[in-house]
Amino acid sequence: MSRPTPIKIGQLEIRFHRHPADTDASFSVFESTIPPGAHVPAPHSHVGYDETVFGLTGICHFTVAGKEVALAPGEMLFVPRGVVHSFINRGNETTRVLVIVSPGLLGPEYFHEVAAVVNAGGPPDRARLAEIMLRHGMVPATTPPLAAAS
Image (cartoon, rainbow, N blue to C red; front, side, top):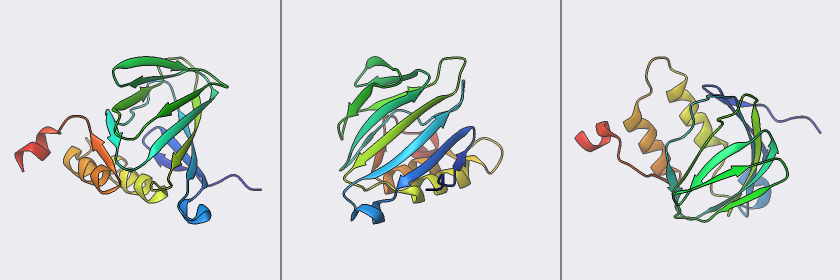
């Protein structure tokens, strides 16, 4: 089996192992590679789906409902829908996690859209990112200043 083609978002890399279409939208599975100091999504919650995250390499720091969790290789973290969370790689080595989304309402389309905005050069359009997030069932924990002005 070949390794899925990566979706690059800035320094992040996402590889889909199971697309929602492969599972009749029961779940989707993707791997995130997070280099040290990489820019990661702002705190957010999900509407309609849960996330289960497995640590593969390195330590990934999550904040879930205001509590800090250091996810190590072999450990699992469950993030229920509606719970605000964020993550960051504070270490010196690249972190990899495997994410299962259930039901499979989040697919590679979301990441391709975000990549187009983030990789365009210059500061990303935060209002556009918020709009993409909302369309794909993610709710930013804070309203970006540009979105509030429109």
